[in-house]
Length: 182
Image 1: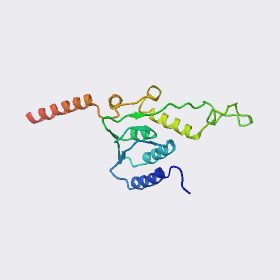
Image 2: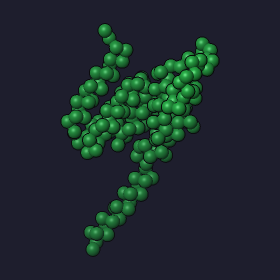
Image 3: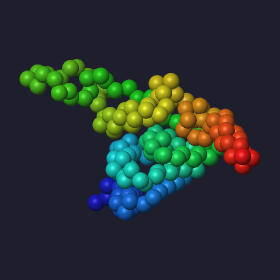
Image 4: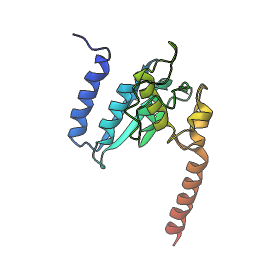
């Protein structure tokens, strides 16, 4: 029987094999319109976090990214993105009492009233977690629902920063000249 996200499940298994070899670098090219489902993105993240500290992760967005795909891209030690590509993630509204808590009263047999439109969707819970993790790199609350271009990504240090790069090039360039002249 086919599983809904078998494409990603197969790729995750391949990624686990590659990561287990402890390579010096792994590059993930992200091409095409689409979104990695939240659950798959969280699974890929767990695999990537389990890599050797000596394995450098390069994420290359050759297309615009959305949702779970954004999470995978920001995890790169080195991030590349096509100049005209954009990032997008939608807002998610989950009820504050949607997740069972450690201190909940389990004897309370009656759940709080919810109408038919307020059903809790586990996929939305996963998507909310994806947004929490993206928030470690980008301010989700302010950027959700907006297209995010390369200039904004530079401001957050997610891609090369021309001002910093030119400053460093100048600083190191002068250092080399000073060493040569001595």
